[in-house]
Image (cartoon, rainbow, N blue to C red; front, side, top):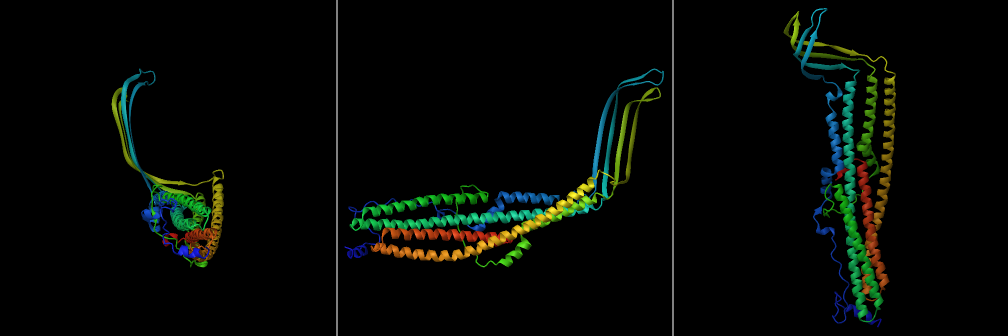
Length: 460
């Protein structure tokens, strides 16, 4: 029988058809999973553009940048004059009782009067210890700092979008690997059932094959949940409904030519977080100079043009009751000057605090520089290690697929045990999953390097 077994299986048709009288029911076919092929395609570039337009973090950062831009004016710095118009109109109704010496009182009930006061005033500070010019430069620097913050937010969000997008690609790839494993498991069930039918295998073998097949189905269902979760996370970053379905159109392609020295140079020149820290030092320096400017005198000019009119319907001219009106129209102008002499040492306290804040900003710059250098070094080491692992896993998956093909053919010929076939199948699935994970991690490290060097958005 051992010698007839290979001939028996070679005589079976490729589909391993069985007669209705002897063939047991095949295991129920798994319903086609909701994989990425059935959904509208989405490229990484499209996802990035959606995030740039709709991500709430980016939109809020741009709102802050708009506020900083609005604040950057000469008027906000105090360099422009102020012009104010005022108008007041009052009406009075009084009961008057007026007495001079021992004379009889002069009494008026319900006497009315009205007063109109209107003027235009101009104020302009022409010297304040150069504080207005320092403030204007500081406002410019604050705008640049907010622009750096916005750019950093964009870079970090694009990194998150890229990682989330390739996470979807990875989970979808695992589904395809599980589907391939299910196809092999189905072939194993069919072959084992054929062996049982001709009496060369025990029923326990086909039961074991079905158990393993169902275990792979369970893994596939769990993987489908992971895929849906990855899609929800990406949709949240894109600022759209969590249930929006899509199919990732791009695959994970890892650049293998990133060098350490150019990345370090780009980080020093273009990293937005580093630029933000540098501008923070400049802002603190302007604060110290503004505190120092308070010690200087200030000089300004004032001018005004006004109208005052008073109409009194209950005025006395001697003993006679009459009406009177008074009207003043004219221009006034002059200079104002002030000099701080003593304010309880508050000016000195403000200068000392500003100096401490400047030193703190310099320390923060050094800390940011060191942290970014450490992040770059860590990401680069991870990138290099993942490239080596990627080459290894690419070789492993080729070997594992060849091993499964050989094992399946040997099992078809009756030259391999079911356990050995299952082990070969499991080795291929594990190799495929490891390859997807390592490829994703290498891409993640590459994305981190591009973000640290300030070139991620241009690279998309």
